[in-house]
Length: 428
Ligand code: HAM
Image (cartoon, rainbow, N blue to C red):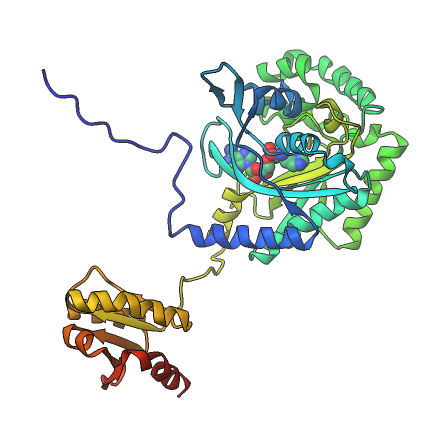
């Protein structure tokens, strides 16, 4: 029988490795995000990447695309129905309730980052394992916090070199005023029922707000004439939304009132927003999105607790940072190159590396190489000022040769004096 060719393994579709050449961007973004979140008074939380599937079904929403089409269900030996988290908010709400955070002084401000999983059709900026940095504030209904979350997004993106940001913002109202809007939307769309795409006909029955999310060409002319939620807000929701916009004006942050913005998750009340790169062609899709969700804690079994939050899509932000040629760390700042020869030299080199490190002198090396020529070539390429050469003889004498890379002048010094000697030379 012919042998079956060996399988070549690949990362699962829509998932990828983050490689050493990419990670300086990720590191810069995550470090900036963590620091800024803490400076804005948020505390870090980590929740499991797998949760009870029902948490997302009830939290994110049973009829949302995220739950209906994109969720990864996990089979367990015990028969529990779990799912890989498609987003972070329901898990953080569960953690808030489960860990008694409702009895802490409110608001409780939490942030997190990590992978989320959505079984979407992969394309530019859309992955099945995606990374988010999220912020959630619990226990305060104030409009100022909606604005603070948006301020954070601008601030973070600016701090990683992305300035051309704007946001789309809308208000979806609350359980008091939403039904009136929903009815107006249904009345309007029913009139056009026969002209709608099959998805919209389904949305009409299951989730009318999502009609405004439709990207189908044939539904666009109908959509542009649809009633806008802001025209149906109750007094309290109107006041709240007006205040949010006033805060943004005060901060001089650019926004666009987008009456078609509905967001793809079911829990939102009042303010919703999405963050965009100004040049939409350069960054397809939102860089982040969020809003207020004053009923979710209660719907998931907690006490009524107002809340607001955002999640930024790190994959998309990193892609933009690369496109915009944002400067990132070029790696360690090597001061010297350690050249070793022979087994004895290698042995002493490891010790010398440690001694230099303790003294704050970072040494590059190529321990696996034996040829002095090859090692000197690397030292040259790195542009270090000095090479330290440690061969058999030097190992025996407890010395090391300091070679000035520019002049080629060499001097032998005792290993125990090398730090002192180098410091003197660096000072010159
Ligand atoms: P979301 O709008 O579903 O909101 O996701 C937030 C961001 O994650 C998006 O704007 C996008 O940048 C990024 N993202 C989403 N799906 C993908 C994907 N397949 N590939 C790459 N990036 C993606 C939420 O997840 C809510 N939990 C936000 C929130 C927090 N609302 C209140 N608190």
